[in-house]
Amino acid sequence: MTGLYAYINKKIKDSPADMPSMVGRLNQKISDDFGPLNFVSPVEESYRGAATRNLAEALGGEREDYTRAKKLMSAGDFLPGIGDAQAGVDAVDAANRGDYLEAGVNSLALLPFVGGMASKKGRELLNYFEIPEVNRDTPLLQRVGDVDSVNNMKVEYEAGPQTLNLPMLRAEQLLNRPYVSTMADTTRGQGETVTKVDDVEVDATMHGGQDHMARPGNIQEGSLWASASGAVSGIMNAARQASDLPGAEGKPVFMGYGMGGHSPMFATFTGDVSIPVAQARMSPAAKKYLDKRIREGRGSITGVKDWPGIDSPDVYEFMLNSGGKRKKVTDALDEFRGEGALNSSQTRAIVTDPRQINPEVGDLMNVGEIDLNRKAFPSLHPTYNTSVPGTPLGQFGEGFNVLNAKPFNRSGLLFTDEMTARGHDLNADKLPAPVGKAMQGGLIGVLDEEIIEDLIARGIVKP
Image (cartoon, rainbow, N blue to C red):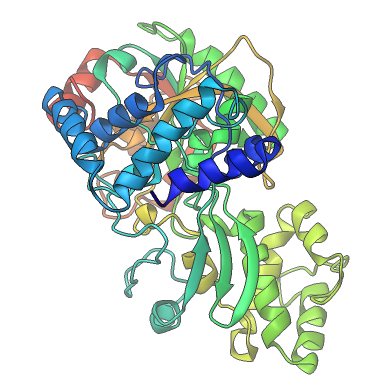
């Protein structure tokens, strides 16, 4: 037999001591304690069983989907590719009984072939590792004239550790739960690495974004969300405030609301993508002018006096630690797009989650439970240094915006009433800029029975 089964057996035979690290590279270890993740199997259950259930969730999660999943798993034994994957799962079960794979195998049930199947959950992708075609109305564009430059790029990605396939949320998980909602940029977050942009090799790993809570390493750490230390303190305090709202029951949930198409530019991995391209393509003379432009600024734009230079060996460390200065650098690179640098539209397209290529500010996607019994702790995210402790719960179907969740601002005022009183049209095609700015302070509320019934009727949560 070929494929994963043969590979694992060969590794067991040739170098059993290497097995934990090999499987760790295939899929990072996920802790056995998943808290409220109802769809995760008990530890003693076989990986084949867990894969069957994951397949059923991918098919929709209804009773008939579990029956279909069992039949497909059985038939899959005889299908090229899928048969090998299932043989690999059985091999893991057998090897695990011999303790060969004690470390690093808990996420192997999240088989890659499941993630590639059609789903009834919405936000479907035929190929996550392609950039969707953009047009003049795509929100991430810096200029409408950038359409061709984005669509003509050739970008290569390498998959990261398999992320958790969050199921659609059930009504009972959310009813009367207090919530906190803060900004979530639209960056990719499944741990994939950008390896090539056209003819230039790069090494830029995507950390998210919405999928931060679904990555194996973050699940093991109990890192639900990541932000700056002060912002995390604000989220924890907001969770306590939300818990005191009338009608609130149970632990608070976190649901980051989607930002606009330009939101990826703060992330460190924008520089990880754009700097090597500029280094490889720009002439020495153009680089000299670029460095001067960054250090001195332009017009009302202040310079970055401590910029080390585009070819400096310290440039990546500078970008990692420079906070808001990163955007000044990428803005300057955009000005040198005719000299070989990527324009801002290209950079955003490369790092944007393709499911969020056309975002609506305020849209909700992934949801997790905040653990107020733990303190904030250091984050694995390179852009945001502090973690909100907690565990993922699931995801909404498409079409739920935080403005429809009866949000309060941190001052205790009903947010939509306040914004309407100020003369803002919340039903406009594009959210008014002052409303978006006011949302940045964070919103809180309670997912009461009226909200949940509406979500059930619209197919956004399961009954």
